[in-house]
Image (cartoon, rainbow, N blue to C red; front, top):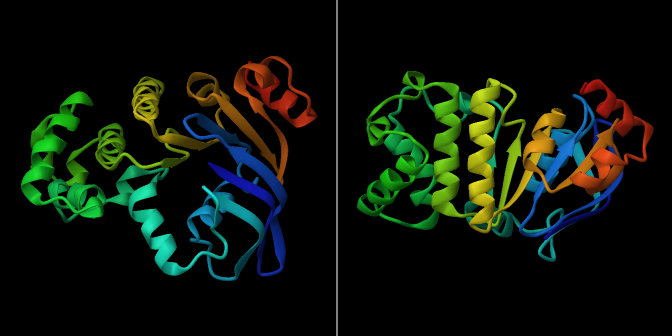
Length: 248
């Protein structure tokens, strides 16, 4: 589905991702793991063509054959609207605190696929119910909801859109362990409905609980890839071994 070949990212002359090559298979949950500053989020920014000022990406980055690094603005806009859906680390920052949830969830879901308000409210209420959320949150403000509830609201929007690829960038780091497990359960539900999932994380427990495949990054380089079941039992790179040792 998504393949990188010799992907490099420079920011103001400093290389933050070095000739990275990896593959994200369709229909799977893939976790990209590494310490802070390893280049994970910059890699995601390159996928979305949302690199910061002064950054430049080179190499190849293809989604279903489309060259993302050289795609037109119109092609990228279409991908972000329907094919890509991104959930960021702190869900509260994804919402405007002064606007009620119904307007914001509409923009994140029905507004992207062209549905009207009536269709949105009917379907969104059903989805919220599946996520153990009351429909009355549509009439509430973001600051009235917990972090876990806001993350589930983002999952609800993804379930509404049913994107080809969901990118979750450190989605559980602000959640306690109980809420984290619930969130990962909903990610798996979305995956079972056909969405490929990429989780960006530094938490091996998240990888073990949710992912099928894993990509290990260290200092801007891919050092190991493979099925989670294999890598966790037989890691080959010293950095991966240290990560596993630190888990216990």
